[in-house]
Image (cartoon, rainbow, N blue to C red):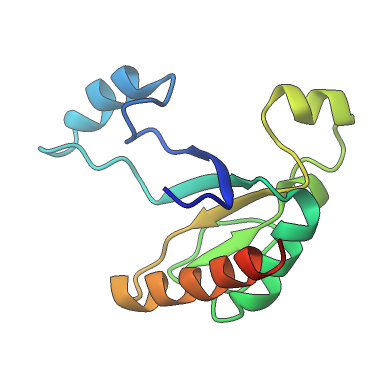
Length: 126
């Protein structure tokens, strides 16, 4: 993994707390199971790192709500979860450094390149 990233939330990862449930549910739809296109990750550098990533990954549009054919990203602390108390957000693993990514239909190379651009900005901001 990347040292800039503190945690990744994706049900396709074996360490996800609901991985077994997701594997059972998604294996009914396809073999091997496809776990969806929503990935959430939290930067060690908190809000400053998330802001740097959002600015630098400028080929991925920022959207307050996700679900498009194109890859988009959001910052749950200031959008979807802004109405929760800080304690409630913390209990859900949402910090200033959390980014939610919805993967679209662009080429894998284009998405990875845009993500790398954002990650380099986070790494450079340490």
